[in-house]
Length: 507
Image (cartoon, rainbow, N blue to C red; front, side, top):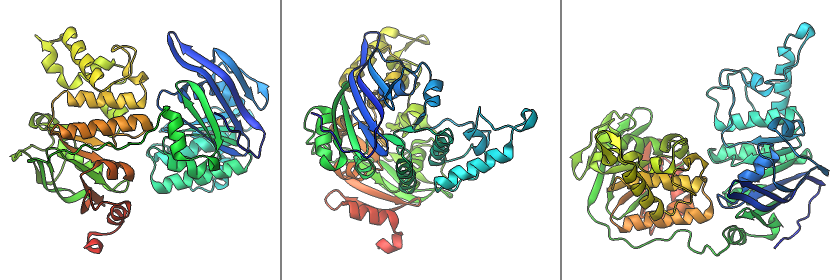
């Protein structure tokens, strides 16, 4: 079903019936997208719906096999990203790639620096224009500082400044808020609204519906490579959008099995790392999910990395079944029965160039080896078993894992660690960047694992996920646990109060 929304500007970008296949794999069958000037247009869909392929066609990375592509009413067919940029299209990715050794100004004007007589770069003019760009965007970034060490939020602003400097009229923002704090999101949204009000067209791709409904004017849904609907944001709801995305009702996003809570598996006592976290103590029992909540930067990831032996701590103790686990020794933590699924699955959890099978068996290589060589038949058998149990969607086990959707990559990381038969699973941001349908699958799996007797420590920045999944909530503020809240007593208000007030205030 399609409902035509009202828009204040003419179409800036139109795609009609666009199709794209990669060999036997069909990515798009019939994709439509109409984005108007003076608007922010949301593009949503599950992982694998075809959003990224559509964006890459607009950006000139891919060429469509069929369909129409119009820019400001004229048919176009970009053969490179340079052609797309020259036509006024800019894509702002979740993690921009700036030159770290160059200054902010040099990054903005890379490849098109203004020159003086005799071809010398006019650095004064370049810096003045950079300052003017940041003034227009109402942000404060030093044009002379090196790009290295800049936050993701500042890097995205620099990419936006670069786009404005070449007068890009269509800006596509692909999951731009996934790694941002609340304050950084607010700043990015203010910039986006100012660009809209200047007469530009923006496409906003996100799995976060609260942000989509707060920022966007119009929303288009894709499913299985096809166009489903377009609505004015005021005339639809989250429930309706979710139903269209997955093609069914998702009535139980947080399926929770009742699991008997058993003996203490993991004990953390007085864990302290100077300047990072202080006097952290908690336990994890078999059959329970312990949620670690708190604001970004509170120290949650640092705590679990120290517990698993990745990061150093100065004092305290970690015990499994009452036995001490050596510090700074992940191998010992694994031998004791722990597993850690990191927050950044692409950089820390996977070898992107390797196959699905190889990644699924990375943590169990010694079991699959004979005389120092990997037995490929054992590897494939083990990988097939876990890919089937976790319903990993892939054409073949020898497919590069980097080509899978975010949700399927997360399943591969989970499978890699579950194959070690852990007793305690530590999982950091289990559903970040994953679509709503796959989120429900991950939540169901975590609940099922707890029902089988695993103890689970789950870090999440999404309060609904914490409230819907955890049996107990530990709230971390500035490196300290400020509250322990039972499932029955946990509310968004109680968690946020503990996350933003000192221990003394809570007591």
